[in-house]
Length: 257
Image (cartoon, rainbow, N blue to C red; front, side, top):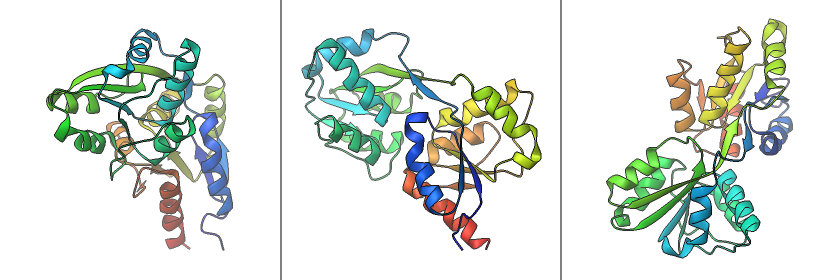
């Protein structure tokens, strides 16, 4: 029997990113339920990003914290008619590195552990006095900025996009969690935003997350967000990637067979 046979697994990723996880789960027998708790929107202002794109050569390092940041950076450069070529590109993990490759650039630095803390640690030894541009989500955690600033870097933070709750998700979440017979077996969380937004949606619907539902986290940053919400994960991927998350889920339920 496949390890995830007939397991109903809620995917909270943004719509444009959900298919890989859904396909991998389906291949192991799971029944994916796609209800996004985030979608990507333009930042409140492009002012800092536009200025950075226009003076990209002034930065010693450009660091990206997600594939979404890469896509938004590239899209904005195209709008402005610019072809930025950063001196050194640092990324948080392999998915972001692939996104960099897809726009014709190369990731020079990928930390061994795919977190903002690990990226800060990798950049830290040579950060002092360097001009570093961080391209990330609006209202993203300040972990990376704070660590690099403490290491002596001159850090510019450019919001390339923001996360928001999609229209229609409130009704879908309320429907799913109003009837115990419809509860998923597992919820996958792939970012801190997916966790926070799901709880916000449940609260708006006058509901709470059922204790019986397994909470699966993609990595330590997402797990920290869940703990801060009083909902520690039951499962955490060995590394912050979709394949590792699926492997962790399969191992958990294979052991229960």
